[in-house]
Length: 268
Image 1 (spheres, rainbow, N blue to C red):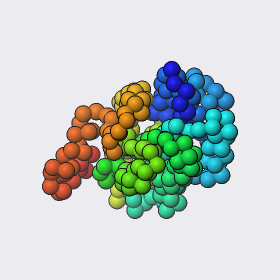
Image 2: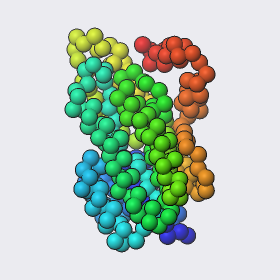
Image 3: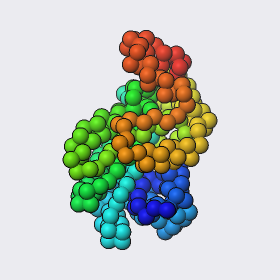
């Protein structure tokens, strides 16, 4: 059994919940966050209120854990939100909101734990990104951008942190059966919009993919496996073989051929 301390953002449902419960069963001391926790503790996860878009709540949670545990060994940045819509018709405030959550929020949580990890000369930060971050997907362009930005930032961050013995990696899931579709911002399908037909059809296809997605426990087991690695690599992908293969194809195929493949997939 281990007494290592893990902080997981977005742990009340879906992938974050599965990761928290799996790690707690393995003996980790797990602190999970959500904006409005309904319980103080459940299935081994101690819940704390945290909104990644509000730095003061991040600092309060980190301080509370350090007061109780004296250390934070692992940070799993899982909190995030989805967004769909034609980029032209997506309100600026919604674009900023998803960047605040999926990108700036993650950066601020990392900044909050780094002093403690540097002091203890050890730490491991895992950023949950998305296979969508490896390609610009139609009507999910903003979401792809937030996750792609985090993938690249992690590459830089890793090099900056090596001298402090702090590890960082990305784990990119494909489609998983979670409630992200219900919680994401949907730009409305506007009657008479030039995007009405294609966006409407693509939206239905995206929701079908999530509904048929894999069990979040697959991600939990992958996170645990990566946590055991002494020298983790930079990028991990978790999902159906076709989803992971699509990333490899992007490096092989000419740009226009790959674009055509995506358009055929989404029936555009």
